[in-house]
Length: 164
Image 1 (cartoon, rainbow, N blue to C red):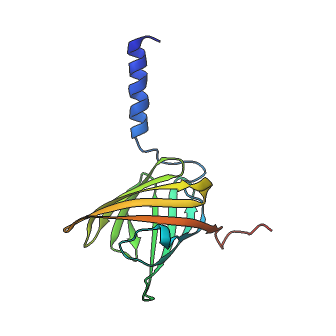
Image 2: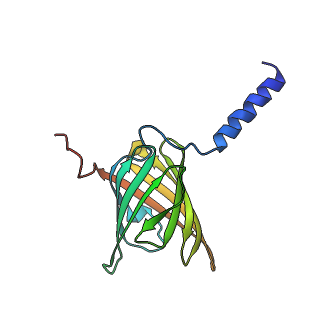
Image 3: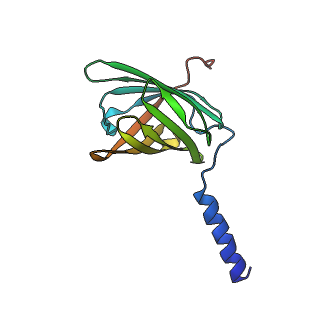
């Protein structure tokens, strides 16, 4: 391959790597229950969280999150959106969010948190799919605030048949 063709191929591969891959046929995040590892997380609002990924077929992501503050206050939020689709509201929270998957086991989401500002978050499966770690930031009037969510796999969705 001559130098010009090699350079063109390199540019095409680089450009392709920079574009968000929209969907993966098997889904991006395993459906089931994920529990926040509080010791390994840095939260804007500390507390326990349980994330239930109800559906992820590579086209649509649906989840419910139950958060409990240290004082015992419970907050339930949910999301249903399309990978590469229009922004969708996070029910129970003052947020609009868009999602894309830049590769297998990876999710990029971004949007606006009412009263705080614009946010972005990059998440990836690790440890053979047993951890789901997200690093996020939001631009507030007081400057940038960051967090790390470190979720550990707890088991399959309770609405799916269990195998013995």
